[in-house]
Length: 412
Image (cartoon, rainbow, N blue to C red):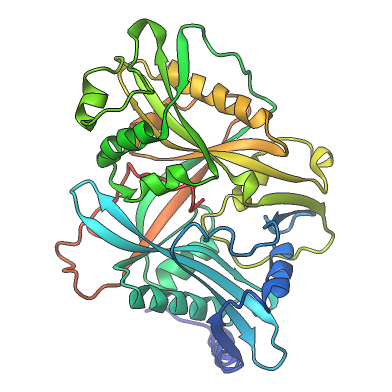
Protein backbone atom coordinates (compact mmCIF):
# COMPACT_ATOMS: atom_id res chain seq x y z
CA UNK A 1 0.00 0.00 0.00
CA UNK A 2 1.28 3.49 -0.89
CA UNK A 3 1.04 6.08 1.85
CA UNK A 4 0.36 9.65 0.67
CA UNK A 5 1.32 12.49 3.04
CA UNK A 6 -1.56 14.60 4.32
CA UNK A 7 0.13 17.73 2.97
CA UNK A 8 0.16 16.21 -0.52
CA UNK A 9 -3.53 15.37 -0.29
CA UNK A 10 -4.29 18.92 0.82
CA UNK A 11 -2.20 20.33 -2.03
CA UNK A 12 -3.98 18.11 -4.56
CA UNK A 13 -7.38 19.09 -3.14
CA UNK A 14 -6.52 22.78 -3.36
CA UNK A 15 -5.36 22.37 -6.97
CA UNK A 16 -8.59 20.60 -7.93
CA UNK A 17 -10.59 23.35 -6.27
CA UNK A 18 -8.62 25.95 -8.21
CA UNK A 19 -9.25 24.05 -11.46
CA UNK A 20 -13.00 24.04 -10.78
CA UNK A 21 -13.00 27.78 -10.09
CA UNK A 22 -11.01 28.48 -13.25
CA UNK A 23 -13.29 26.28 -15.37
CA UNK A 24 -16.32 28.43 -14.56
CA UNK A 25 -14.48 31.61 -15.49
CA UNK A 26 -13.30 30.56 -18.96
CA UNK A 27 -15.10 30.25 -22.27
CA UNK A 28 -13.76 27.99 -25.02
CA UNK A 29 -14.81 29.37 -28.39
CA UNK A 30 -13.70 29.57 -32.00
CA UNK A 31 -11.07 32.11 -32.94
CA UNK A 32 -12.51 35.33 -34.39
CA UNK A 33 -10.18 36.65 -37.05
CA UNK A 34 -11.55 40.19 -36.77
CA UNK A 35 -11.30 40.74 -33.02
CA UNK A 36 -8.78 38.18 -31.69
CA UNK A 37 -5.80 38.68 -33.94
CA UNK A 38 -3.97 41.20 -31.72
CA UNK A 39 -4.32 39.12 -28.55
CA UNK A 40 -3.20 35.95 -30.32
CA UNK A 41 -0.19 37.80 -31.71
CA UNK A 42 0.66 38.84 -28.16
CA UNK A 43 0.32 35.24 -27.05
CA UNK A 44 2.70 34.18 -29.84
CA UNK A 45 5.23 36.91 -29.00
CA UNK A 46 5.32 35.83 -25.38
CA UNK A 47 6.10 32.24 -26.31
CA UNK A 48 9.63 31.22 -25.41
CA UNK A 49 11.52 28.18 -26.56
CA UNK A 50 13.33 26.59 -23.64
CA UNK A 51 12.62 27.23 -20.02
CA UNK A 52 15.09 29.01 -17.75
CA UNK A 53 17.03 30.58 -20.60
CA UNK A 54 17.92 34.24 -21.01
CA UNK A 55 17.56 33.91 -24.77
CA UNK A 56 14.05 33.60 -26.19
CA UNK A 57 12.85 32.65 -29.64
CA UNK A 58 9.58 34.09 -30.86
CA UNK A 59 7.41 33.17 -33.78
CA UNK A 60 6.70 35.77 -36.43
CA UNK A 61 3.51 34.50 -38.07
CA UNK A 62 3.77 37.23 -40.69
CA UNK A 63 0.62 38.79 -39.23
CA UNK A 64 -1.55 35.69 -39.71
CA UNK A 65 -2.20 33.39 -36.71
CA UNK A 66 -3.99 30.97 -39.06
CA UNK A 67 -1.05 30.71 -41.45
CA UNK A 68 -0.10 27.17 -40.38
CA UNK A 69 -3.56 25.67 -40.91
CA UNK A 70 -4.82 27.54 -43.97
CA UNK A 71 -3.52 24.67 -46.12
CA UNK A 72 -6.39 22.44 -44.91
CA UNK A 73 -10.07 22.73 -45.94
CA UNK A 74 -11.17 21.30 -42.56
CA UNK A 75 -9.51 23.41 -39.88
CA UNK A 76 -10.29 25.15 -36.62
CA UNK A 77 -8.58 27.42 -34.12
CA UNK A 78 -10.04 27.57 -30.62
CA UNK A 79 -9.25 30.06 -27.88
CA UNK A 80 -9.73 30.08 -24.10
CA UNK A 81 -11.18 33.42 -23.04
CA UNK A 82 -11.58 34.85 -19.51
CA UNK A 83 -15.24 35.81 -19.13
CA UNK A 84 -14.54 38.90 -17.03
CA UNK A 85 -11.59 40.54 -18.76
CA UNK A 86 -11.98 38.93 -22.22
CA UNK A 87 -8.27 38.12 -22.14
CA UNK A 88 -7.16 35.11 -24.18
CA UNK A 89 -5.19 32.66 -22.02
CA UNK A 90 -4.96 29.66 -24.34
CA UNK A 91 -5.19 28.55 -27.93
CA UNK A 92 -5.23 25.29 -29.88
CA UNK A 93 -5.21 24.57 -33.62
CA UNK A 94 -6.63 21.49 -35.29
CA UNK A 95 -7.12 20.12 -38.80
CA UNK A 96 -8.60 16.99 -40.37
CA UNK A 97 -7.21 15.12 -43.36
CA UNK A 98 -7.56 11.80 -45.15
CA UNK A 99 -4.69 9.34 -44.89
CA UNK A 100 -3.85 5.94 -46.32
CA UNK A 101 -2.17 2.98 -44.62
CA UNK A 102 0.20 0.25 -45.77
CA UNK A 103 -2.68 -2.25 -45.68
CA UNK A 104 -4.74 -0.11 -48.05
CA UNK A 105 -7.16 1.31 -45.48
CA UNK A 106 -8.39 4.90 -45.80
CA UNK A 107 -8.75 6.86 -42.56
CA UNK A 108 -9.90 10.30 -41.47
CA UNK A 109 -7.47 11.70 -38.89
CA UNK A 110 -7.61 14.87 -36.82
CA UNK A 111 -4.28 16.59 -36.14
CA UNK A 112 -3.55 18.86 -33.17
CA UNK A 113 -0.94 21.23 -34.54
CA UNK A 114 -0.57 23.71 -31.70
CA UNK A 115 -1.48 24.13 -28.04
CA UNK A 116 -0.53 27.07 -25.87
CA UNK A 117 -1.61 28.12 -22.40
CA UNK A 118 -0.62 31.34 -20.66
CA UNK A 119 1.95 30.73 -17.89
CA UNK A 120 -0.36 32.00 -15.15
CA UNK A 121 -3.13 29.61 -16.22
CA UNK A 122 -1.18 26.39 -16.55
CA UNK A 123 -2.18 23.40 -14.37
CA UNK A 124 -5.66 24.88 -13.99
CA UNK A 125 -7.49 22.72 -16.51
CA UNK A 126 -7.30 25.15 -19.44
CA UNK A 127 -5.25 22.80 -21.63
CA UNK A 128 -7.60 19.90 -20.90
CA UNK A 129 -10.63 21.95 -21.92
CA UNK A 130 -8.95 23.08 -25.13
CA UNK A 131 -8.01 19.50 -26.02
CA UNK A 132 -11.52 18.22 -25.24
CA UNK A 133 -13.02 20.99 -27.38
CA UNK A 134 -10.82 20.34 -30.41
CA UNK A 135 -11.49 16.58 -30.11
CA UNK A 136 -15.24 17.28 -30.07
CA UNK A 137 -14.83 19.36 -33.23
CA UNK A 138 -12.95 16.47 -34.85
CA UNK A 139 -15.68 13.97 -33.95
CA UNK A 140 -18.39 16.27 -35.35
CA UNK A 141 -16.46 16.40 -38.62
CA UNK A 142 -16.04 12.64 -38.92
CA UNK A 143 -12.48 12.10 -37.66
CA UNK A 144 -11.78 8.53 -36.55
CA UNK A 145 -8.53 9.32 -34.72
CA UNK A 146 -6.82 12.30 -33.11
CA UNK A 147 -3.09 12.70 -33.60
CA UNK A 148 -0.29 14.89 -32.24
CA UNK A 149 3.49 14.99 -31.89
CA UNK A 150 5.92 16.18 -29.24
CA UNK A 151 9.59 15.88 -28.35
CA UNK A 152 10.68 12.77 -26.48
CA UNK A 153 12.11 14.76 -23.58
CA UNK A 154 8.98 16.91 -23.12
CA UNK A 155 7.70 15.12 -20.01
CA UNK A 156 4.99 17.68 -19.28
CA UNK A 157 3.45 17.28 -22.72
CA UNK A 158 3.69 13.49 -22.65
CA UNK A 159 2.04 13.38 -19.22
CA UNK A 160 -0.76 15.68 -20.34
CA UNK A 161 -1.69 13.56 -23.34
CA UNK A 162 -0.97 10.02 -22.17
CA UNK A 163 -2.05 10.20 -18.53
CA UNK A 164 -4.81 12.80 -18.66
CA UNK A 165 -6.09 12.49 -22.24
CA UNK A 166 -5.56 8.74 -22.94
CA UNK A 167 -3.31 9.05 -26.00
CA UNK A 168 -0.95 6.18 -26.89
CA UNK A 169 2.41 6.14 -28.64
CA UNK A 170 2.05 5.64 -32.39
CA UNK A 171 5.56 6.16 -33.77
CA UNK A 172 9.10 7.32 -32.99
CA UNK A 173 10.97 9.62 -35.37
CA UNK A 174 14.12 11.70 -35.62
CA UNK A 175 14.23 15.37 -36.60
CA UNK A 176 17.47 16.29 -38.40
CA UNK A 177 18.50 19.97 -38.29
CA UNK A 178 21.29 21.19 -40.56
CA UNK A 179 22.65 24.78 -40.45
CA UNK A 180 23.05 25.96 -44.03
CA UNK A 181 26.15 28.10 -43.55
CA UNK A 182 28.22 25.12 -42.36
CA UNK A 183 27.58 22.87 -45.35
CA UNK A 184 29.96 22.16 -48.22
CA UNK A 185 28.03 22.85 -51.42
CA UNK A 186 30.11 20.71 -53.81
CA UNK A 187 28.21 17.85 -55.47
CA UNK A 188 30.06 14.90 -57.03
CA UNK A 189 30.40 14.99 -60.81
CA UNK A 190 29.21 11.39 -60.90
CA UNK A 191 25.78 12.42 -59.63
CA UNK A 192 23.07 14.35 -61.39
CA UNK A 193 20.17 16.13 -59.67
CA UNK A 194 17.30 16.88 -61.97
CA UNK A 195 14.02 18.68 -61.31
CA UNK A 196 10.88 16.65 -61.89
CA UNK A 197 7.84 17.95 -63.72
CA UNK A 198 4.98 18.27 -61.22
CA UNK A 199 2.73 15.76 -63.02
CA UNK A 200 5.52 13.18 -63.00
CA UNK A 201 6.25 13.98 -59.36
CA UNK A 202 2.62 13.23 -58.51
CA UNK A 203 2.84 9.94 -60.40
CA UNK A 204 6.07 8.94 -58.67
CA UNK A 205 4.70 9.72 -55.22
CA UNK A 206 1.42 7.92 -55.82
CA UNK A 207 3.45 4.76 -56.25
CA UNK A 208 6.13 5.26 -53.63
CA UNK A 209 3.79 6.45 -50.86
CA UNK A 210 2.14 3.05 -50.82
CA UNK A 211 5.27 1.71 -49.12
CA UNK A 212 4.59 3.94 -46.08
CA UNK A 213 2.70 2.91 -42.97
CA UNK A 214 0.84 6.25 -43.02
CA UNK A 215 0.63 8.87 -45.77
CA UNK A 216 -1.70 11.70 -46.91
CA UNK A 217 -4.09 11.08 -49.78
CA UNK A 218 -3.77 14.61 -51.17
CA UNK A 219 -0.11 14.55 -52.22
CA UNK A 220 -1.05 16.37 -55.40
CA UNK A 221 -2.37 19.27 -53.33
CA UNK A 222 0.84 19.40 -51.28
CA UNK A 223 3.05 19.44 -54.38
CA UNK A 224 0.96 22.20 -55.99
CA UNK A 225 0.99 24.39 -52.88
CA UNK A 226 3.03 27.56 -53.46
CA UNK A 227 5.31 26.80 -50.50
CA UNK A 228 6.45 23.59 -52.21
CA UNK A 229 9.23 24.88 -54.42
CA UNK A 230 9.88 21.68 -56.36
CA UNK A 231 10.68 17.97 -56.57
CA UNK A 232 14.03 16.55 -57.67
CA UNK A 233 15.68 13.17 -58.25
CA UNK A 234 19.31 12.38 -57.53
CA UNK A 235 20.93 9.54 -59.50
CA UNK A 236 24.25 8.32 -60.86
CA UNK A 237 24.99 9.53 -64.37
CA UNK A 238 26.54 6.22 -65.38
CA UNK A 239 23.28 4.40 -64.62
CA UNK A 240 21.08 6.78 -66.56
CA UNK A 241 17.54 7.90 -65.82
CA UNK A 242 14.23 8.41 -67.55
CA UNK A 243 13.06 11.43 -69.51
CA UNK A 244 11.71 13.43 -66.61
CA UNK A 245 9.79 15.79 -68.83
CA UNK A 246 7.85 13.15 -70.73
CA UNK A 247 4.35 12.03 -69.76
CA UNK A 248 3.46 8.44 -68.97
CA UNK A 249 0.17 6.66 -68.59
CA UNK A 250 1.35 3.79 -66.41
CA UNK A 251 2.95 4.63 -63.05
CA UNK A 252 4.42 1.13 -62.77
CA UNK A 253 6.34 1.64 -66.04
CA UNK A 254 7.57 5.05 -64.85
CA UNK A 255 9.41 3.52 -61.92
CA UNK A 256 10.31 -0.01 -62.90
CA UNK A 257 11.39 0.10 -66.52
CA UNK A 258 13.39 3.26 -67.04
CA UNK A 259 14.91 4.30 -63.74
CA UNK A 260 18.53 3.87 -62.75
CA UNK A 261 19.57 1.21 -60.26
CA UNK A 262 19.95 3.69 -57.40
CA UNK A 263 17.98 6.92 -57.06
CA UNK A 264 16.46 9.27 -54.49
CA UNK A 265 13.45 11.54 -54.89
CA UNK A 266 12.84 14.52 -52.60
CA UNK A 267 10.82 17.73 -52.38
CA UNK A 268 11.50 21.05 -50.64
CA UNK A 269 9.02 23.16 -48.66
CA UNK A 270 9.81 26.83 -48.01
CA UNK A 271 8.49 27.79 -44.57
CA UNK A 272 10.09 31.23 -44.83
CA UNK A 273 7.00 32.36 -46.72
CA UNK A 274 4.59 31.21 -43.98
CA UNK A 275 6.33 32.24 -40.76
CA UNK A 276 9.76 33.03 -39.35
CA UNK A 277 11.52 32.95 -36.00
CA UNK A 278 12.98 35.83 -34.05
CA UNK A 279 15.61 35.65 -31.30
CA UNK A 280 15.61 38.10 -28.38
CA UNK A 281 17.29 38.40 -25.01
CA UNK A 282 14.99 38.24 -22.01
CA UNK A 283 15.76 38.51 -18.30
CA UNK A 284 12.30 37.25 -17.39
CA UNK A 285 11.51 33.69 -18.43
CA UNK A 286 8.06 33.74 -19.97
CA UNK A 287 6.83 30.81 -21.95
CA UNK A 288 3.62 28.96 -22.74
CA UNK A 289 2.80 25.36 -21.85
CA UNK A 290 3.66 23.66 -25.12
CA UNK A 291 3.49 23.79 -28.89
CA UNK A 292 2.97 20.51 -30.69
CA UNK A 293 4.91 19.41 -33.74
CA UNK A 294 6.02 22.91 -34.69
CA UNK A 295 9.56 23.44 -35.83
CA UNK A 296 10.18 26.72 -34.07
CA UNK A 297 10.42 24.84 -30.75
CA UNK A 298 13.13 22.65 -32.26
CA UNK A 299 15.27 24.87 -34.39
CA UNK A 300 17.11 27.28 -32.10
CA UNK A 301 18.82 24.77 -29.79
CA UNK A 302 20.22 23.07 -32.90
CA UNK A 303 21.46 26.11 -34.83
CA UNK A 304 24.94 25.91 -33.32
CA UNK A 305 25.59 29.52 -34.24
CA UNK A 306 26.34 32.59 -32.16
CA UNK A 307 23.28 34.18 -30.58
CA UNK A 308 24.81 37.62 -31.12
CA UNK A 309 24.83 36.98 -34.86
CA UNK A 310 21.11 36.22 -34.87
CA UNK A 311 19.86 38.55 -32.17
CA UNK A 312 16.62 40.31 -33.09
CA UNK A 313 16.71 38.94 -36.64
CA UNK A 314 13.93 36.91 -38.18
CA UNK A 315 14.96 33.71 -39.90
CA UNK A 316 13.28 30.81 -41.66
CA UNK A 317 14.08 27.29 -42.79
CA UNK A 318 13.51 24.77 -45.58
CA UNK A 319 11.86 21.43 -44.94
CA UNK A 320 12.91 18.33 -46.91
CA UNK A 321 9.95 16.01 -47.40
CA UNK A 322 8.82 13.07 -49.49
CA UNK A 323 12.29 11.50 -49.36
CA UNK A 324 12.28 8.07 -50.95
CA UNK A 325 15.07 5.98 -52.45
CA UNK A 326 15.73 2.71 -54.21
CA UNK A 327 18.95 0.81 -54.81
CA UNK A 328 22.05 -0.13 -52.86
CA UNK A 329 24.23 2.96 -53.27
CA UNK A 330 22.07 5.54 -51.51
CA UNK A 331 24.65 7.13 -49.20
CA UNK A 332 26.23 9.42 -51.82
CA UNK A 333 22.85 10.27 -53.30
CA UNK A 334 21.53 11.34 -49.89
CA UNK A 335 24.66 13.44 -49.39
CA UNK A 336 24.13 15.11 -52.76
CA UNK A 337 20.53 15.86 -51.77
CA UNK A 338 21.81 17.35 -48.50
CA UNK A 339 24.26 19.64 -50.28
CA UNK A 340 21.77 20.60 -52.97
CA UNK A 341 19.22 21.69 -50.35
CA UNK A 342 21.90 23.73 -48.62
CA UNK A 343 22.56 25.49 -51.92
CA UNK A 344 18.87 26.26 -52.35
CA UNK A 345 18.61 27.65 -48.83
CA UNK A 346 21.71 29.77 -49.26
CA UNK A 347 20.00 31.57 -52.09
CA UNK A 348 16.93 32.44 -50.02
CA UNK A 349 16.69 35.50 -47.83
CA UNK A 350 16.70 34.85 -44.07
CA UNK A 351 17.00 31.06 -44.45
CA UNK A 352 19.34 29.67 -41.78
CA UNK A 353 18.72 25.91 -41.64
CA UNK A 354 17.02 23.05 -43.39
CA UNK A 355 15.20 20.26 -41.61
CA UNK A 356 13.84 16.81 -42.33
CA UNK A 357 12.12 14.18 -40.20
CA UNK A 358 12.23 10.42 -40.70
CA UNK A 359 10.72 7.52 -38.80
CA UNK A 360 12.96 4.98 -37.11
CA UNK A 361 11.62 2.40 -39.55
CA UNK A 362 12.41 4.46 -42.65
CA UNK A 363 15.18 2.71 -44.67
CA UNK A 364 16.75 6.09 -45.47
CA UNK A 365 17.15 7.16 -41.84
CA UNK A 366 20.54 5.40 -41.67
CA UNK A 367 21.73 7.18 -44.82
CA UNK A 368 21.33 10.75 -43.55
CA UNK A 369 24.76 12.45 -43.79
CA UNK A 370 26.35 12.75 -40.35
CA UNK A 371 27.97 16.16 -40.64
CA UNK A 372 29.79 17.86 -37.74
CA UNK A 373 27.07 20.50 -37.50
CA UNK A 374 23.96 18.33 -37.75
CA UNK A 375 21.67 17.96 -34.73
CA UNK A 376 19.08 15.29 -34.03
CA UNK A 377 15.93 15.47 -31.93
CA UNK A 378 13.85 12.45 -30.95
CA UNK A 379 10.19 12.97 -31.77
CA UNK A 380 7.16 10.99 -30.63
CA UNK A 381 3.78 10.68 -32.35
CA UNK A 382 0.69 9.95 -30.28
CA UNK A 383 -2.83 9.00 -31.27
CA UNK A 384 -6.25 8.37 -29.77
CA UNK A 385 -9.27 6.59 -31.22
CA UNK A 386 -12.27 8.91 -31.49
CA UNK A 387 -14.69 6.70 -33.41
CA UNK A 388 -16.88 4.25 -31.52
CA UNK A 389 -17.40 2.19 -34.68
CA UNK A 390 -13.88 0.74 -34.81
CA UNK A 391 -13.33 -2.67 -33.24
CA UNK A 392 -10.46 -2.32 -30.75
CA UNK A 393 -9.38 -5.92 -31.44
CA UNK A 394 -8.82 -5.25 -35.15
CA UNK A 395 -7.70 -1.61 -34.87
CA UNK A 396 -4.65 -1.45 -37.17
CA UNK A 397 -3.56 1.94 -35.77
CA UNK A 398 -3.63 1.18 -32.04
CA UNK A 399 -2.55 -2.46 -32.15
CA UNK A 400 1.01 -1.73 -33.37
CA UNK A 401 3.63 0.98 -33.68
CA UNK A 402 4.30 2.36 -37.15
CA UNK A 403 7.86 3.10 -38.20
CA UNK A 404 7.95 4.23 -41.83
CA UNK A 405 5.68 7.26 -42.11
CA UNK A 406 5.32 10.24 -44.41
CA UNK A 407 5.92 13.52 -42.58
CA UNK A 408 3.56 16.12 -44.02
CA UNK A 409 5.31 19.51 -44.42
CA UNK A 410 2.03 21.24 -43.57
CA UNK A 411 2.14 19.70 -40.08
CA UNK A 412 5.71 20.69 -39.27
